[in-house]
Image (tube, helix red, strand yellow):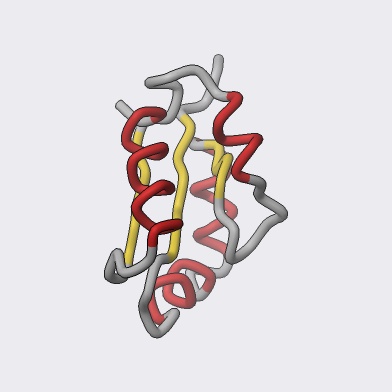
Length: 85
């Protein structure tokens, strides 16, 4: 069975939200058993082009934290919205 795909992205913020996900520790491994984290630049090698190559709607949910203050944040938020259900 294919696992649902999720993405996490960090805009302008202190980084606390990303840290709280990493602080899940072993529970993060449980998450990995039921969902595939396919995009998370703070914790893995993630490229904009890899995200662009995904089919629209192929990500179950994207979690974006922080304020959208820069043009690249706007572009990423729009791209993640298109790729997410």
